[in-house]
Length: 167
Length: 167
Image 1 (cartoon, rainbow over the protein chains, first blue to last red):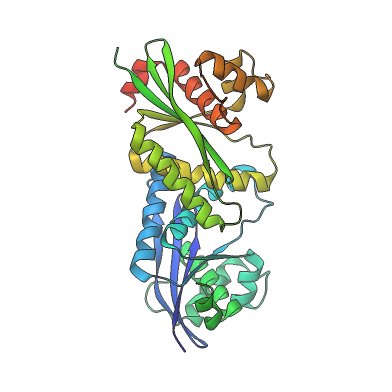
Image 2 (cartoon, chains in turn purple, brown; image 1 turned 180 degrees about the horizontal axis):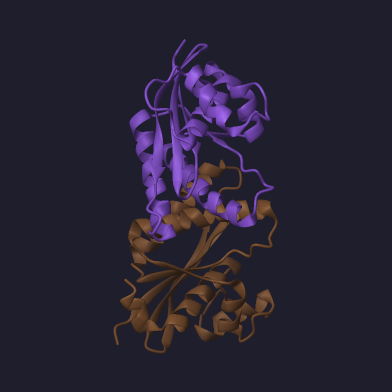
């Protein structure tokens, strides 16, 4: 079975997390994960540009077959929706530029896939990701763990052959 | 007095309007205006990428000294905030990439600047823009008119010397 690579993205203006996983049949391993932080005192346009180039670099480096993001919880404060929405638009545009299709999962779907329950506490996501992907060394940041979680959710939801066919 | 160029942007997923004005002292003339439409059936990532490249093209062609956008009316439906926010983030990122500072004006501020009242009906903006900028031929689209209006608002609010100094 041809291995496929999935990029998970957790967009945010202050910090965008990313996680890249390799899916070989039922086996999923982490290839990379990390944060794209932006300078708090920089203008929003400059910070959004940084997110764009950061996501574009990850896409160029790992050439994922598919990308996945959490859908936004629409019950959030409108200002939070705007801030995350702007970062999200930029991350999606970078995927569009690279010709990488992106999928969306509700936060509860991601938690259910990774923790077994859609109501699992936030900290459990990081712990489960570390166990499932057998991560060693420093635990991933919260954003990177969320990005790995949505990548894992996507990999398990659609399965590797479907991911490849979706290109 | 050195002339300055201001780019107004009215971001939207379906269509992003732009308007470029030249400010020479108190005289403001329109250099260009138009729409960046996206394909309705394309994936959001592809549409957002199209907005990014479209705004980048306008920036490269007209080399504005400054950009201006309307701030989002936060009372909108959360889904609308997300959709416009994503397009807005992409337009801002393109400004960031070009090193062009961007300013924000509340919708009522723009209407007040152009129509003399913050509560002027939407159609009046297009009519006033056509008169003030002595536009000939086809009237600008609604998005392009809104983009020209925010550019004009910015030009009048900060004045040409301040625009140049802000670089």
